[in-house]
Image (tube, rainbow, N blue to C red; front, side, top):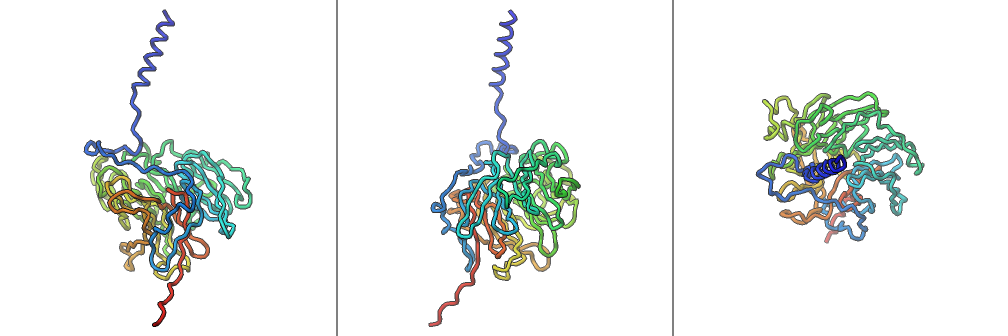
Length: 406
């Protein structure tokens, strides 16, 4: 009798386990009933190697005098970059593949190897010859890696109080001019009341993980930040939430003029739009507004202030901002790099196209590449990573020759 009962109980448990519906994917969160039939979904990453000969680099359009060329390929999913002090090594993290790549510049060509694999969305940064790898549940440091490909990792995970769950998590970490390590801790969902105060923050630490300080709150999903070369202020990109329609809330470009500022998530978005689902009285009161709106669902990624001498004077002390491109709107937006120049009065910015041509149709998603991050080389040229095709493009400038006199 007991065996029959046990079998029946086991069968009931098995049936209930099978009957439980699978939870929706994280990107579905916040999808209202009015959009229940929408077919919009994140674009699948290619995640396989693309030969350089198959990359349509000729489709890219840049201002006169600028040139884009393939600098490296064979880096499926490559995102944010960190350059060694001598410029001969470039390290990249990934999202879906969980890899960290090392690109070695031999002068005539570039070679690629995988430093570490099977991590959860690792981001990378270099500091004093050590490579820091931030995965969602792990922090590793490789000392002297540029000169030692067999460097063993030092596990620093216990020194950083990592949140248990993250949906919008770090894809980018950086050391600031103050020598501190800056780490974003994104919101745990598309839109929700965070379960604790450890989310939607930007923090900074000492290099060893001590001295934690929260410098900004209400930051939904920053994918990149950089320091203004003159003012020293930290400027950062931030993704707007999904499923509120084609036109917003727009992605943001923000700056931190002092520690402790609140940037609105989850109650207030863009330039003062209260959230329709997560409601709060005076939702936008005390919220620091963006320096600029960067477009609806644009997927703003890396930002880099240009400090080199190769580009013309009008590009110096401007920032380049990468917009990887939308998915949560019926027509594409982004898929480009823009130049952002602060106005002389300190209020607002000018935004101009810089690199376009990744998407071939303004009315439909016919993109071949998705730009992600920028890095500046010692000669003043810029590297631009393409997550979709797993490539790095080098952008350089030569003054156009004057037309010959007739």
